[in-house]
Amino acid sequence: MSWRSTGVAEATLFPGTLREIRVGGSSLLLVRLGEPIYALDPYCPHAGGVLAEGTLEGPRLACPVHGAVFDPRDGKVLEDPFGIAPPSGGVDPLTRYPVRLVQGMVEVDLP
Image (cartoon, rainbow, N blue to C red):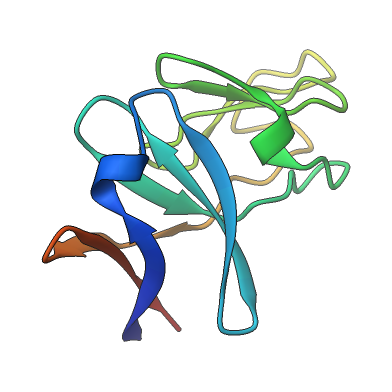
C-alpha cells in the first residue's frame, strides 16, 4: 500500500459530501460523515451505478440505479436491491481505503 495525495483539502469536504475523484489511475469516492472522511470504490458492485450520484443519509449511501445501500464507514451492504438480507444477498461490499490528513489535505492508502 502507498499513501497518495488526493489533491482535496479537508476544508472543502463538508459533512454529507460525496465526491468522486481520480488518484493516479484509480477512481475513488470520498464520503464525509461529520468529522471522518472515508474513501471507497466509486461504483456499485451490483449494477455499476455511480455512487457520487446516489444519496447519503447519515451512514447510509444508496446507489442511484437499483437502490443497494452501503455503510461508508466499512463498505458493508445494508440493503440488497433484491430484498435479500445481507450478507446473503447478491451485492458485494464496497472496498474501503485508509484515509489520513496531512497538513489539511486528504491522503488515501492505495494498493
